[in-house]
Every structure is written in structure tokens, then in C-alpha cells.
Length: 240
Image (cartoon, rainbow, N blue to C red; front, side, top):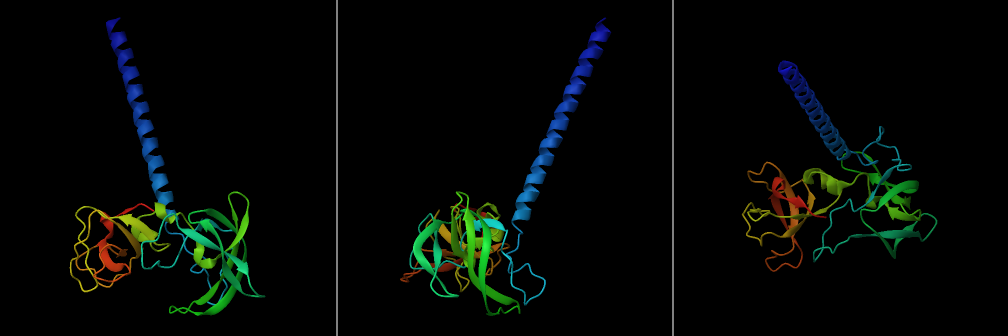
């Protein structure tokens, strides 16, 4: 009888261990899938980049994304948060201008129409089209925004070196930040501090493996605008 009880207990323990192992495998698999989806989202191309013929007009219609700023932000002071995106109004048969009305950056949108104009060729020999997009917000309202304000993914959830390919981001430096300036000299900055990062193309990277260019609006050397510095991207944390 004792042997049977022991066997029964061992069987229950084995089943429980097996079930626990299965749950752990499923949890790891789900984590891997979510990580892959997140990384895949960070590789989505802009419509301007995802066309077969360099002369073709890009198609935004039907795409979902977010409002943002896909050009580098500069200025004489740190841009206040939350960032706002101008709403465009028609000023002529083919002309559009920014109005005083704005919507928040990071607003989820779906493109329902586009009004684009050919503006020339980029340095990589791809036709450039700019204009406005008619987008629908989550609340059902519809507005026109610039093509420069359409971002195809939630970039602020991406690794920072991929995020800046979509939009500028606000990041927090660590206490041991050791950035360099455009001459390759180390710069002493207040730590920690907020910086505005905007590109992975840097002037001077020294021995950094993951360089990223950011504006620091505290260190100024008498200059009123932010100073461009190079940081190690692996040490920065996106906060906006």
C-alpha cells in the first residue's frame, strides 16, 4: 500500500512538474513572439521608401500610424511636451498651409486620402512627393496633416537607434554620461539630464559602438540653441 501511495505521489509530482514546464515554455514563446512583433514594428518603412519605381508616387491611403515629426527638431530651447502637430487648411487650388489648430503628437490615425505634389529628386535618386494627408483620428474626427507628420509605427516603443529613424525623441542620460562634441572632445554635462536625440548619423563617434546625435540645451558655451553632442545610445532611456 505504501509503495502504491509513493508511486501515486511521484506521478502527481511529475505531472505537476511537466505542466509547470509546459507553462514556462508557453510563457517564453509568447515573450519571444511579442519581442519579434515589437522589433518588426520598428522596421516598418515610410511609404516614400517602400515603392518599386523611383518615379512612383507613394501611397499612404489605408495606412495606420501615428502623428509625429519625422524631421529633426531644432530650436533655441528644449521643445515643450506634449508635442503638437499643426492641422493644415487649403489656401489655393493646390496649396495648403498650417493653421493655428493642432492635434497631439502620438495620436493614432488612419490615412483616408492624400494630396501630394512632386518636388524633385532626393540624393539617392528617388522622386520626392510632399503634401497633406487626410487622416481619421480615434474619436472619428478627420483633419489634414503634413506628410512630414505621419509616422508608420509607435516609434517611442522602439530601441532608440531605430526610434530616431522615425522621429526625434527625448531621452534621459545616465549619471556616468560621457558625450563628445563635434571636435571629438569630451563634454561635461549636468547628470542626469534630458536630451533631444534625432539621428544615428554622427559627425564624430570616437570609440562608441552605438553612437547617436542629440541636442543638449543646458551645455551651451554662450550659444542660445542646443549643442549637438554624440552619446552612447545604449546608455540612454527614451522618456518621450
